[in-house]
Amino acid sequence: MQEKKASIWPYLLIAPALIIVIAVVFIPVLQAILMSFQSYDLRRPNNIAFIGFENYIGLFNDKLFWKSLFRTFIWVGFGVGLQFIFGFVLALILNQSFRGRGIVRAVSLIPWVTPGVLIGLMWRWIYDGNYGVLNDILMRLHIINDNIPFLSKASTAFPSVILTIIWQGIPFFAIMILAGLQGISQDMYEAADIDGASKMQKLFRITIPSLKNTLFITVLLRIIWVANSVDVIFNMTEGGPSYSTQTLSVYIFNKGMAMDLGYASAMSLILTIILSAVAIPYLINKFRTEEE
Amino acid sequence: MDKKHISFGKIFGLYLPLIAILLFLLFPFYWTFITSIKPEAELYGSVVTYWPKNTTFEAYRKLFFEFNFLKAMGNSLVVTVSTTVLSLVVSVLAAYAFSRYRFKGRKFFMVMFLTNNMFPTVLLLIPLYAIMRKLNILYTPGALVLAYTTFTIPFSVWLMNGYMNDLPSSLEEAALVDGANRATAFIKIILPMLTPCIVATGVYIFMNAWNEYTFAVMFTNEANRTIPVALKSLIGQLGVQWDLLTAGGIITIIPVCILFFFAQKRLVEGLTAGAVKG
Image (cartoon, rainbow over all chains, first blue to last red; front, side):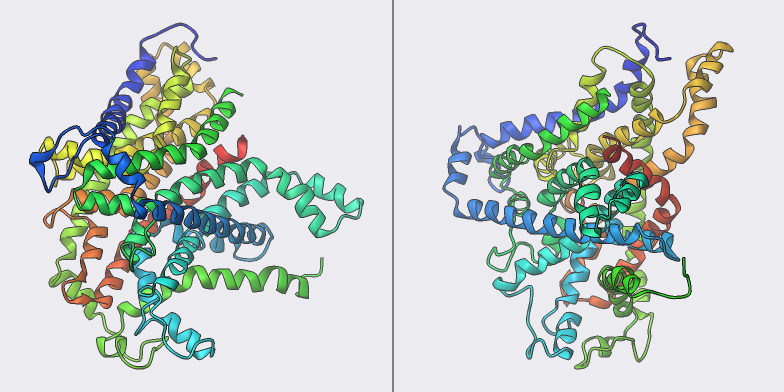
């Protein structure tokens, strides 16, 4: 069915997309590599010059870099981990039949289509230390006695932004897992019922193994997105107070906003290399799927 | 099956957790809306009210007449529509080539598009800023459109490719036998069949471009800033104007929600197909 003979057509068809992508992705990546070896600070435009590995040596000695990197692991670990658990629970619920399921499914996806800026700002208002509703709810339930300024205390700020990213990510996980659940053949469950399997046994012996690939892809994608996410944290705390919510992406963004582009490039290349540990398995999986 | 009797199992296994999760997911939106219609005295009063005692749409009026939110909406619309059209046109063509032709380097190019999605935003943001500054196109809508194609084109190519692979190619072959050339077959037969998928992909691109902040805050100035940047700018000068901010938030998500509900089913199908199939 597919055309076998060589033709110029397919190349012409992919040319426009390819040219744009080379111009806006591949050339900038090369530029980032070059910039990472330069003192490229736009506040001092006359000092732009090649400085070898100085940026890399600088970040190696930068305590803030290491702290931000460590915080990125916590951010991704708790953020993605709990999105996964709650998303799984929501998917199991949505996989049952009840009235209004279609509407519930669509509505529960709204956080996923909400702009990161708005998510950050909405939650900033909820967490507000003076007029925030979360404080009011906790007071009414007698869990706390005094208002907590969640985002301006270093000890509560990071858990608070993590809760927000969990909130954002639950729907995506739920919808991916739900699609996977609906692909599992009912026969397996029926066979398990005949053998007298318990609900838990069915979950761990049938459901989770059947979802292995869906879970793998979803977790990898989500790790990449959450690690790269800037807008939610930036709009809640800008990385503060005293850097307690600054992940590596936010640190890079802040350096970029401060026009220190050389140093920011060096850090973003390190981040890319670290994330490729996740991206490469994803690419290999996609590649393999495509071959079938 | 006994339908009238709601079992304990259903209450604890379905309704209670469902209500808890929905409450958690949707309460922030309720709160945002309530905040936007509260008068200032109530907003910053000593008692937090869960339904406004007095409602006012003053914040919405201020947003449009004093803050000029319409300008930001216009800017967002220009950038978003341009991004969507440009990305769709080039992605449909590329996806068609990947789906219907077997050519040398096909796999290499496909992987090239896929790799794009893996680069951190900040990795591209910094050099793009430097390049656009040099080319003197910083602070134009074009700069944002180009920046957005970094994530919209690769993703759309993959999404459209998935949709096209599921479409039978027999109709096109019939058209080719009839003597129609490939371009005509594409326009007359393929494109109409693809319309639902193009709409779904378009909605996805629209949502992403409409919501984007990280590029927008660096690549715009006051004259051409988009909605997300305008929202953030409500914080700062005079403390935070929460009533205006939440009103702006509500206006921002309405178009996205409408589009999303419209294309939801097919979009989810497309997004999940890749993960489920493998």
